[in-house]
Structure formats: C-alpha cells, structure tokens
Image 1: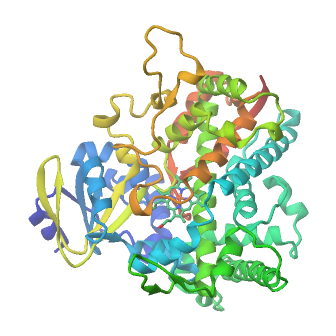
Image 2: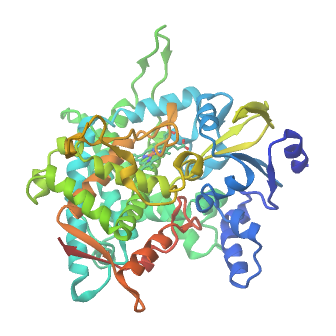
Length: 546
Ligand code: HEM
C-alpha cells in the first residue's frame, strides 16, 4: 500500500521491508545487517539502506542514483530523503507544513518533553527560558574553559604516549573534554580534565563529577532501550545488567540536577548575587510569570521542575556528544592531512603570541579563520547529527524540486540530509569528497598584492548549500559555543604540536594517513544516538613538537 502511495506521488521511490523505527530493528537491526554481511548474505540494498542512520554513510551517492529527492516506502509509512538545497530551505521555512517529527525525537524524552521535543508556543517557552544563557559573556567563558581543558587533554596524551604507545582513546577523551566544558559553562561546575584511562582508578561514587559524567554517558548509549522499556521497565527482574545500569543512570542524572537546583535555591534564599549559569537562570525563572508580546497578553513562560531537568538533559545531550564526535572527527581528519596542520599552525603563530593559553584572549578567537574553516570542512564531510527530521502531518504538502512540482503524501517523514546536501557534486564540484578547508577562505580585492592573514575572508558558516548548525527558527543555540570550544582545542594542540598517524604493518607514513582518511569516512550508528566514526581506536595517533 505504501509503495502504491509512493508511486502515485510521482516522486522516485525505493522500497525497504522494515520500518526504520520498528523497536526491534532499532535495537538489533544494524547488528543483523553486519552479521549477514560477514557471511556474504547481505544484498547491496540491505547493506546500504537498512542500518540505523544509513544516510550518513551514503552521503550524496544515493541521491545521484535516485534523484535529489526520493521516497523510501516501508511497512510503517514513507520517508522522504531530500538533498536539494532550495527544497530543504523551503521545508525549513514552512514551519506549520513541515513540523518536527516527534515520533523520531521521542528518544530524547528521557525526562519528558523539552526544547527539542516540542513545537509552537510550548517550544517558544522552552527556547526562551533556556537560550538566554547563550550570551557572548558565556561564550568567552567557554573559550577560557576550553583552553584549560584542552591543555589538560594534551598534557594527558603527552604522558600517555611516552614509551612509544599510540593514543587510541581520542573519542573517549573528547567526550570527557566536552562534558567538563559544558559543566563549567552551563552548570558552573568546573572539573579538572582527567583522561579516559585514569577515570576508573580515581572514581569515587560520592564525587559529583563522576555522577554527572557516568550517568550521562550511560544514558546517551542507552536511549533506545530507555525509549522502548522506560525507566521502570528497565529495572524488571528479567532485564540484563546493562538495562538496570541504564535505569540507575537515569535516576542518578536526575538527582545530580536536583542537587544543583537545591544549591541554587539555597543561594537565592541567602539573597546572594544572581548567578548567570543555565541552572541558576532556570531556577530563578521557575516561578516567574512574564508579560510577553505586543498585545501584552500574559503568557506562562515558566518551566516546571521536571521540565527543567528535561531541558538540562537535552542541553547536556545536544551540547556534549555533537561537539565530542565533531572534535574526534576533526582530530583524525587533521592527522590524515598534515599539510592542513601546517596551514593552521601558521595562522595560530601569527595571532597567538607565546605558548601560554592563559594569554590568549577571547578576541583572538574571532581572528582564527583557518581554524573555523577546518571545523566547517570536517562537519561538511562527517556531520554528527546528519538529518534534520520533519514530518508532513495529515495534509499532503506541495513541493518543488528543480522546478518540478510534486505532492508529498500525508504522514510522510521528511529527512533533510546534511551529508547529502554538503557533498552533492552539483554544489561542491568533483572535489566534493576531497578534504580542503581552504575552500571556505578567500582573499578578495587583492589586485596583485601578496595576501596576508588579515586579507583572508572566511565564508559564512551557513549558506545556500551549507547548514551544519541548521537554519531558521530552530537553528542550534550552541553554534558559537561549539565554534569557540573546538577552535580553542585546535589552538592549544596545533600551534606548537603536530599529530601523526602511527604506521602499522610496514605501511609508509603516506599510506598511514590515507588509511586514516578512508576509515574516518565510515560512520557507525549502532547503539548510539549520533553518527560517530566506526572505529576511531583503530587509528593510532602520536603528538610531536613542531
Ligand atoms: C559541532 C557541534 C554542534 C553541531 C554540529 C550542532 C548542530 C545542531 C543542529 C543541526 C541542530 C538542529 C537539529 C534539528 O533541528 O533537528 C541543533 C540543535 C540544537 N543544538 Fe546544536 N550543535 C552543536 C553543538 C551544540 C552545543 C555545544 C549546544 C549546547 C551547549 C547545542 C544545543 C542544541 C540544542 C538545545 C538544540 C535544539 C534546539 C531547538 O530545537 O530549538 N548544540 N544543533
């Protein structure tokens, strides 16, 4: 029936025999595909479009075969895959025609509804209450904290690599890095950087930093189990240990946030000066009613205690793993491209005087255009979120692709594919899959003069064919936060150091970097929320002084 509906729409379509959000398939689908692949039993179609989050590995390839917009008909309904830039912007603009697909976002409702899982006035309330923390003052704090945490991470790696050992924990260490930056910037809880290898040895169950990091880490890898079974269901007598651990993590994170909230309430009761962090602002605003809008209608702009917990979870989720996955990709992309390391080191040495990060003021962040270009190029090729997911509710919606008009059937789930848009050869040319951050830098109006760093102009971080932080009303509120955070890491790591891929099995350094690049493009989505590199630990890394 769904194939017939797809056919009648005139939009090109392909068929898939399992619904993408079938709970069993969500839990085990990717493993089944991998198992069949190992025994040579997976067809090309099964390998390509059945794993969870398959679009991230396909990038623009499947669109070159089936068009810039096509449907996937499956037993649960229809999924529209879009790579055409004008069509994507049209979809993002028509907010009432294409609404957030709450069914696919339900995994984020661990503590109930929040900013990411609401629409309309309810969403406005969540957004208004939470986004106020994202000021330039806060971004400056992010810059300072990120420099300190990055220094801690580099020092840890330099000790770890003594005796010729390769570093293989970048993906785990970057998660600790982003968790610490976020705790400091949004919760006002600064924790020292502690590398992944040291965590177990130093762990104390009464230590808040472990409660926060451990519980969030477990929740983030268990969101699907939490969605399917719920916090209570996970505790049932018959469930495996990992399920019980997930349930305990949900409770621990809740109690961590409640402790912070109670501390803030005590702070307010003692009439101490207002604090600016996200927890403080939410607790202060908890019982305030604000007058809003030109007609001064009184609208309830408060959040309940449960909504505060749920929003803090969403910020912790959206602000940690996206940046950590992005940062892991960037470090491995940099290791695979030594010439880019030289290119940004020149810029860093030009703008940052001396090797002490304490002396690098927030002003310098805005000058690091090549560093921003590196971040943009890495997100272009490997995006941690991959899809902007919308839905057509009960009313079929007209849509145009390259001047051809279609009607999208009611109930269709709409996936605006960032990896496809960001690599479509029509927009990016034949070098779409080539690493080249300098594509984002130009030197206009030189007229024969030699270019200096000051002449270099960075392309906008959002443009017609490029929107890694989304666009419009639901643009990422943490865009500048993440840019400052990652640029600080690049500054600390690549001003005076370079990162090499450790050669294996008699390969040359060139073969090693080529392997790192190839492997960095293979994305895995099994068991986690985001599109992560499949095997980052397979790429051994080592730092050397310039
Ligand atoms: C490289 C890092 C990051 C990338 C690539 C990124 C990208 C995105 C994208 C594409 C969206 C839109 C999702 C959608 O509409 O489906 C989004 C939303 C969001 N991001 Fe980010 N983000 C990053 C870092 C951060 C950080 C550091 C924070 C907070 C500290 C954050 C908080 C959020 C929140 C709360 C939303 C939901 C906004 C809403 O629905 O109104 N993000 N992000």
